[in-house]
Image (tube, rainbow, N blue to C red; front, side, top):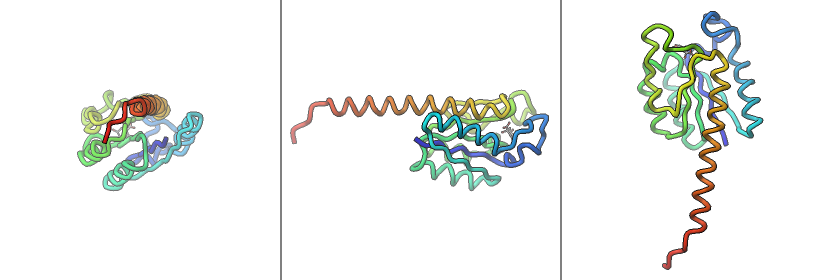
Length: 164
Ligand code: DQA
C-alpha cells in the first residue's frame, strides 16, 4: 500500500514563514515524522511539494495507478482551485485534506475549502501534528479498504461457478 503526500504553495517555506501561525517545524521534519509512522504500518510513502497548481493536478492524476491514498495540504489553492478538486474527484483515490492552522479561526476567505467536499475528511488546526493525525486516519482507511477487498475475494471464490 502506498500513500502520496502532496504539499501546496509556500509550504516549502515552513520554519521561515509566519512562525506564529505555522510554528518552527520545517517540511522535512514533518515528513520524517510521517514516514516513521507509515513504516510502522508497512505503508510506503512519497512526498511531493509544488508552488504550481498544474503540477499539483499532474501529481494527483499520477496517483490513479500509483497510490492507494492521498494526503494533501493544497495551502492557498484550497480556497480557489476547482482544478485540484476536479482532479481528486477524477482519480477516486481516498484523499484527506490537511491544514496546519485552523482555517475556520482565520480570515473569512480561508473559511471555505473548495476541495473539502471531495475528500474523505479534513484535519485542520493541530499545527504540524495535523499531518500525523492525517496519516493515522489514512492507515485506518486503507485497512478498511483492504478488509473489504478481502471479503469480496472470499465471496467470489465461494460463489457457485456458472455453466458456459
Ligand atoms: C494552510 C492554510 C491556508 O489558508 C494557507 O494559504 C496556507 C497554509 C495551512 O496549512 O494552515 O498556505 O493550508
